Image 1 (spheres, helix red, strand yellow):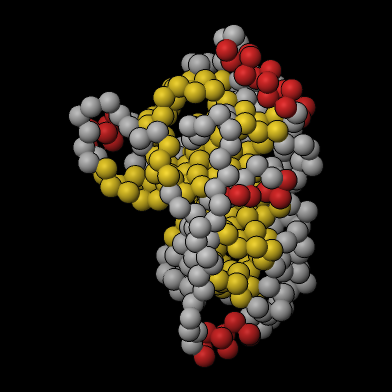
Image 2 (cartoon, rainbow, N blue to C red):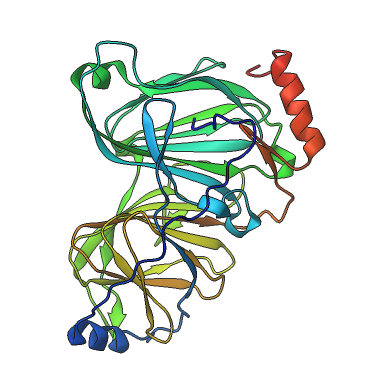
Length: 344
């Protein structure tokens, strides 16, 4: 999904400055200073914060933030490429054709669609047809070429309601770019949920359950996600229930790591105890140093997507719906598509 109207990639400049709180209570400041690393695992620190980017329409059904903005399609995020997030929005009942994006091709990467509210209906050129319902994940490997379409489901279109979803693009290693197209329908009940405990503070480990982590890909505290990937990838859907709660999340120290705030606000706390505030629809790009992430929720019922993976360290050539390693390969993808070679 989420193919651009232009044939070239549109890199969105950041129009909004990073907004930080103008006042912080003495209690919060004191609390953050006391939340320094006491474990033997070093904490990661923030490399850069990306504020929420302005929204744009993809087709007529997906009003999205281009979350990675001008960092999209860079090695800095590898193996992740692009991230579009459709924040909660009300749609009226629709008696006409469902809203969405019609048939379009992909080659050389994978799309991961997560439905939070509402329903997305998918159909592709290799015979897959599915409805992605709240909590479900669709993991589609475009590989050597696929043509697909995505719309609001017929049922959701008739009833209307609140709609929220996101789509991530994940790069394929060079050796796998021409693999056979594949589809993984991952329903909500198949995604394991791990209780999230409070962080170790001043040498004491809390046993209180303060939230949960849905493990979509990779593993969290020994629990593996159901998604099959071509390179090591972590993708977690995390919720922290109470304001002011501190959690530690172990994360492979040689992986790129990205924290997206879907709802609420957080402080990402470094080894020194220095907090970096990330607001709703903002992103923290983490340094590749340390084996754990420390987060303090600044609002109740905070929701995060935490993702990353082992960098591929391969050239990225991307144009429109194709992501390859060279421009010659991009040109060949265009020719193959025009000759009807996709989806076979």
